[in-house]
Amino acid sequence: MGRYERNAPAITADEQKKLAQKSVLIAGCGGLGGYILEFLGRIGVGNITAVDGDVFAESNLNRQLLSTGQTLGRAKAECAKERMSAVNPEINVTPVFAYITEENADALVSGHDAIVDALDNGETRLLLTAAARKAGIPFISGAIGGWYGRVVVLYPGDNADFLWQGKTAPPSGNLCCTAAPVASIQSAETIKVLLDHPGVIRSRLLEIDLLNARWEEIPINFAL
Image (tube, rainbow, N blue to C red):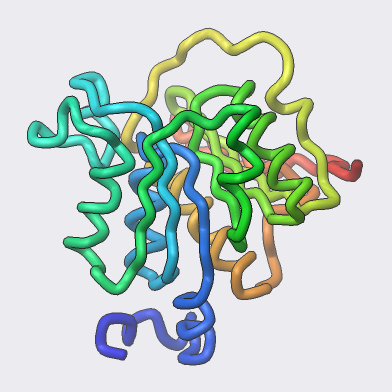
């Protein structure tokens, strides 16, 4: 229990064992996904599928935890597995070097207890959340833009497609100081979902404004 002893008493011994049996899919291993992998692996989620069809580029170095001078040009999903092997070899990480498409979304989400959205575009989020909804799997979504971030948790009976439809917002940059806290919140929400803890960010949208140090919860009816 030594590795996880500092998780207690926030996470009990029985809950720690429960986490070890859980399976989570992280969609995207970049700015959000790298931190989410780190947090969930360190806390003891036993099985993680890391999905990303991209390789690391120099522009990722400003914010992506898995991006280093040594990983440039390498597959993000494979680097995710290597990172967790170094941090916590007890965690089983399955790397999937692929983009999420209409053809593979259902197969990718199958068998998981939670889906964590660390994607960077609305179109793919719509595909993934539809697959999660069909499979009856909770969906923990996060997004960042410049100094701003948002998090929302969707259960199978929820629908927030309107959040990702319409025109894409103009680029506002991606900062490491935004990615890390949003990923941290997503990780906390994932743990609560896996352990059936109360207080999940559901039927409300959490928006974070780090530039003005503001945190706002927006009540929304996500029912289908």
